[in-house]
Image (cartoon, rainbow, N blue to C red; front, side):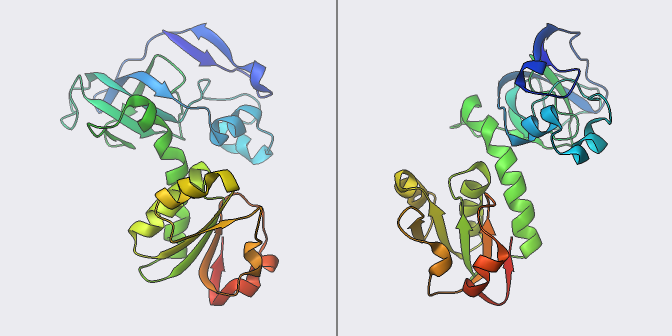
Length: 237
């Protein structure tokens, strides 16, 4: 099968198109024919290993998993003998930041891992990019114990993490103030934000209201700058 592989860390040109053996699912695994994937921040971080700590997970000298791609959407082609949650023909999407492998024609996944069926009104191309940003956003939202009725500010509301955070926080019943670029104001409103701040026209750290949580999804601010707009005991992420 065709796959994009890398055998050493470095810039984008270390990845190359190659022919490798098609994987075979084990008893508790499914074989997925990949229809769509992404190249996201996690892929790039593991490919470059610019932050040395990545090597403790990916391989100290050389990458252990030679195929990147952690987000995917595709169709089940085969299932292991112990799998009863999926069947051949099912359209699925999922996330794998442990073994990666979605930059290939086929990928195996544990049937109990981060994989589920695609809603009928969603395409492969729409499903594949959903998971990475939402995964990180949900981890932080749970860590901050965001609940109904809280006042939350999300900076960077149009990135993968920020756009997911706006929707997830609204789903919890909190009030969302979102910060974004001028061109994305309408988009962020459509995601459910109660109030949108255009950072090109207004500095959100100078707002007169206070927040239970300030979630900087793009790392462009600091605790010191945001402290004045945090409630007593408020959280800066």
